[in-house]
Structure formats: C-alpha cells, structure tokens
Length: 129
Image 1 (spheres, one colour):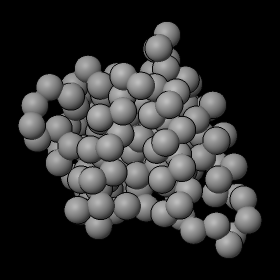
Image 2 (cartoon, rainbow, N blue to C red; image 1 turned 30 degrees about the vertical axis):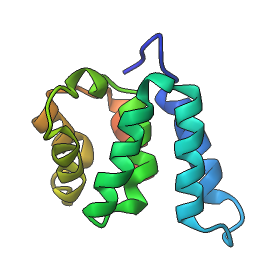
Image 3 (cartoon, rainbow, N blue to C red; image 1 turned 60 degrees about the vertical axis):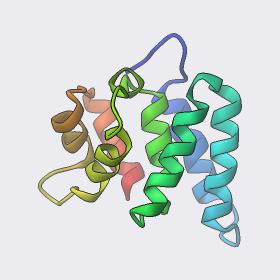
Image 4 (cartoon, rainbow, N blue to C red; image 1 turned 45 degrees about the vertical axis):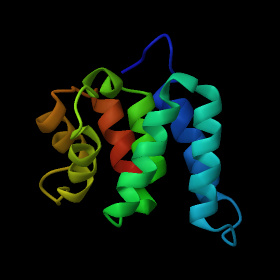
C-alpha cells in the first residue's frame, strides 16, 4: 500500500496510536479534528476527501472511525477508486459492515478491489479495536 506521495501505514498508525494512548482527558473528537488538520497539511491533494470522510462518517454516526478511515484512505490506493458520487457512502458502509467473520480490510477489498498485505491487515485490525 505504499505510494511515493503518501506516508506508510506504520508511520500513520504510530501517530494514531500516540493520540489514543495520550492523556485520557483528551476528547476523541478533538483528536480526530487535529488529525484531519494534520493530514490535510501533509497531504494537500487529499484535503477535500478528508473533509468528505469526516462529514459522511459523522452522518452515519461513526465519527469515532474518522481517523482510521483517513489513515487508510491516505496510505492506500483508495484515492484512485474515488471516481463517483457514491464513494464516501460506500466507504462508510465498509466500516458499518464489519463483523467478527468479516474484518474491515475484507469489506474494503470487496467493495473497492484493494488488496492489503498481511501486515497491513494486522495493523488495521489492531487500530479498529
């Protein structure tokens, strides 16, 4: 999932984990907003997409997944799949379709045809909680 224009999943995962393990008095919404601002600054070509992820995921009641969704988006080939008006709804539905038998990576692969390495699958599963 590495791309010369993006950071690797392990790098972004470390940043996400630092935010999660930081002082527990930090509001998760504040952390998500800060991550979005940081991602937008680091990846200006994705600024609109990151905003749309925030909006759509909020509409679906999964704002707590915004940071993870943005991390996966930036560090994968999802931007190449973002070609229609239903992309963000389909992406949010991937997060809603997760079950014990069907992890997030399988949902994303099924909908968008993106393959994940075993390490990426393990990292994403760990971040998903």
